[in-house]
Image 1 (cartoon, rainbow, N blue to C red):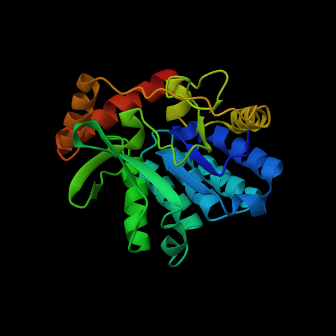
Image 2 (cartoon, helix red, strand yellow):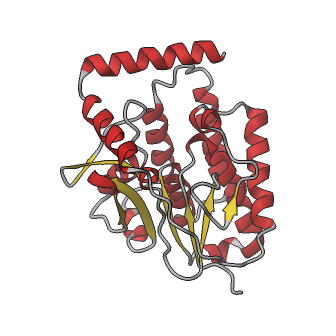
Length: 264
């Protein structure tokens, strides 16, 4: 089989540390020059990795930026600044008029109302692109609420979908449930996806991703699309609506803080 000419990184939250290792292996296996001509896509945290690769950043720069965010979040035990971390890493990657380099090369997934999965791959300016990235990572009460073209969106992962750019798209995921050609073994737990890792865990996840990519046998098996049940998405949309109501925001923060204290 031929080498991939496009890569899609599914959602992953803090499990995107796995994707950092995958990036390292991709560069080693096919070379940075080859990768500069490929197309990239992603949902949620995977969209950040796709952005970094589409802009052809060096592995060391990508890892350093990711570790900077991890280190900052270690002191934020209640994770009240998730959108701030997202903004910092996007600003660390996206420079003036970069959207022009990315139109038609970067594909970002969002979940629209009633679970319609939508890929966005064209922007008129960097701000539109940033809004799409934020929208792809929006989880009610956890991060910044976003509207795209005046319509609310949810995290791209909630559709349980991904975008196959062509027949040589390599799909990479931290979860067997979501599906992919490159998968984390073992699966990430919800806690691992939701809470920033300690440094020792980061390197464990990174190495897992690195080895998974190097061991890939270059077979593009067909992948089933697994969608959320309607009842789950209805709950998420109700939470998105309540996000605007101060009482529910404070209540959710209180529950989250209590869980963090119990798990410490």
